[in-house]
Length: 317
Image (cartoon, rainbow, N blue to C red):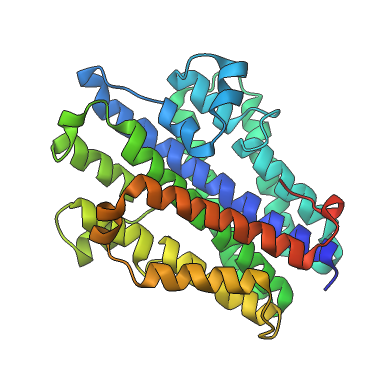
């Protein structure tokens, strides 16, 4: 497969997954802040912290109010990680692959790419409508992922899609956990209180993990939540599940040939398989997440270096 085509497939997948994750975070943060308002603790800054782009936000928007944050993450055409920008970039990549893509899949991605810009032109766009748009973005992104699994043959193109999707999902899950633990707590006295439980529940909700968690663990407990979203090899949004799935697709793309990205990914999976939620807490969640994000960034760089030796050809960011 040409590196350009593989690059376009991966970035199309990553942008769609990124848009869906941001929509999910926006929706859950809105409801969480409604609960926190009564105590005067409403916080929107952590939602920008997830993206790692707080300096860009402050330079363009100032204070992290509900309106500023929601419009920045949903509509801002100049911010590369806004939902509108991600869906537009996915659509542009799809147009470059149109001749190699089933018509119905292209039509779905093309329509999704125009969804948010069309909505943004409405002047009467209130919070409730942004939430409905978030739900629509999530539904359409899941539908496209399902279509890809249903109608694309299991060749290299399919596995480049899955590789991009799972690496993006693992990254966003780790960022969400990092921000939850170190930015949302307004004060240390909230630890192990109803506020703490509510925030861990919101974390599960943002990953569509609440029902799965209650079926397997019951009451909200910090160590169990961390195990669910980091170390569970059976939950599709857990970091370990995502990395193991990415490893499988990477091996199938290269027919088992082992390169630098294979070695790094295998090493990280092996490390996570040996841990428990309590192990992560005992060694320090902050240090664990920072090391994990650094390892995943290195894996992403190794993947792009392996398949695309000329960085100028990359179609993503």
